[in-house]
Amino acid sequence: QVQLVESGGGLVQPGGSLRLSCAASGSIFSIDAMGWYRQAPGKQRELVAVITRGGRTNYPDSVKGRFTISRDNAKNTVYLQMNSLKFEDTAVYYCKADSYGLPPSWGQGTQVTVSS
Image 1 (tube, rainbow, N blue to C red):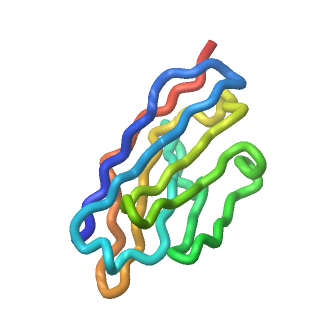
Image 2: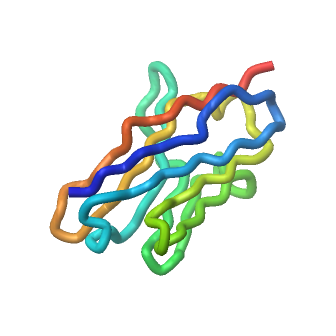
């Protein structure tokens, strides 16, 4: 199994920045893609960013150009740099790991609140 622990959420003003971290432990050698998802109250969980083991990234249009996902395989950690934050970015952000031969793993989530 893979365990994920997120950190870095908090309260930020519109236009501000935050960086989220997700540290993986356990069966880390089985991890392929890692990603960030978010879920706002009353809405479905949605993809924010994904990065493959080889470093390929993908973003939805809603965050493209503002968010950047990166991965440090030596530290088993994935990051999400969020810039130019908007009110609608407010949500609980979850880290996910897709692993070979294992079910997907999810972190416990970290709250991001964009408010003036």
